[in-house]
Image (cartoon, rainbow, N blue to C red; front, top):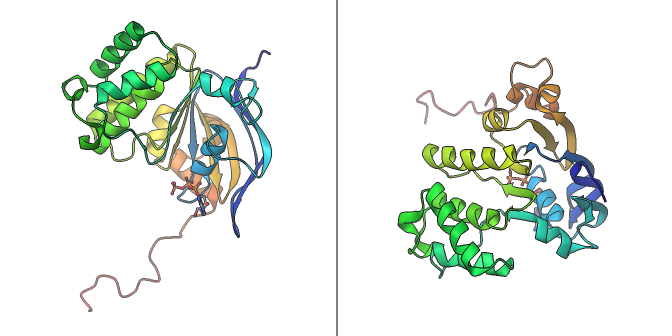
Length: 258
Ligand code: ATP
């Protein structure tokens, strides 16, 4: 089946008790793009990405990734995607190098090929010096990078990243960015979630804006930004948050009065 969409979501719902996390969203994400899923805290980004990558079963709705239904054909989908999930639960008692060897073998790659790719990824991500250190002793940024390496090792068609730059220093962020730009330039698709608008604006050519469990806008970056001077401004208008948080009610804060 030929599909120009990397991801197609229809009528997707997820409820946790009384809380509706994702309220019947439709999404169509084109292949070969650098795509940002943006929204404030609690918008439903992680819940959406978890359902799209087969980690969390939706209450209702369908998800197709590269033309395969995620919940009817999970093996076909999982072979074609890489995921850097929120929270990054990794095998802590393995070294970075061992983690990559294990991931590669799980993906069915021959040992020599796993070694070749692992060494290259460790070099590019500036982790070669820490390859024999246990993952439990890695810093936040190092964890993101080794998680990214594990997600890329089998050269997936679509890479899903939940907040890949959170807690990452500018040098590591630049390294991750370089790897992702190279990856999308070869025709692959990146979908990542973030609430940092400047980052999304500088990286993505396609964005989906989410708030309170709904998609407020989706399309090419320039189209979603519209006449607004920045994506941040367009985002604030879309989610109706202008003026909120200015602190007008916090009359006790500052000013010397205790
Ligand atoms: P953030 O940017 O803060 O990570 P998010 O956009 O990823 O936020 P989600 O983590 O998807 O948002 O959460 C959406 C809503 O669903 C929130 O109100 C959250 O409290 C709720 N929620 C998410 N997971 C669960 C869960 N396992 N049990 C109960 N409520 C949940």
